[in-house]
Amino acid sequence: MSDDVIRAAALLKEHRSSIDRLDAILVFTLAERFKHTQSVGRLKADHDLPPADPAREAQQIARLEKLAKEADLDPEFARKFLNFVISEVIRNHETFQK
Image 1 (cartoon, rainbow, N blue to C red):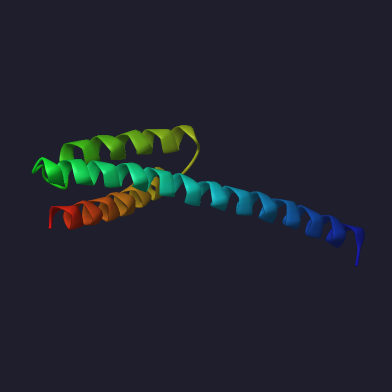
Image 2 (image 1 turned 90 degrees about the vertical axis):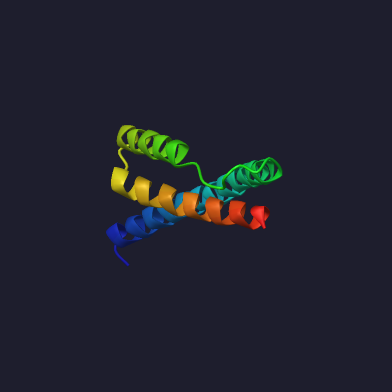
């Protein structure tokens, strides 16, 4: 193997190691987030509040899009991601209502 290929392989290994650490952070962060949203869902169910809060959701989407722009992340991707998370949260809240 040439020196360039060896250096490229070492860089690839470093990038993949960082990606693996970041994936773990994402999973643990999402788990923590869902623990809180489950508590919110139980609270809403206990007080007969609706599982969805469209005004709050719109605020969060706008906030996340702004953060994404600041972080140099595609805001459309951020919006899609948050919409997916919100739909899962609402689905969980609806199960508490039953």
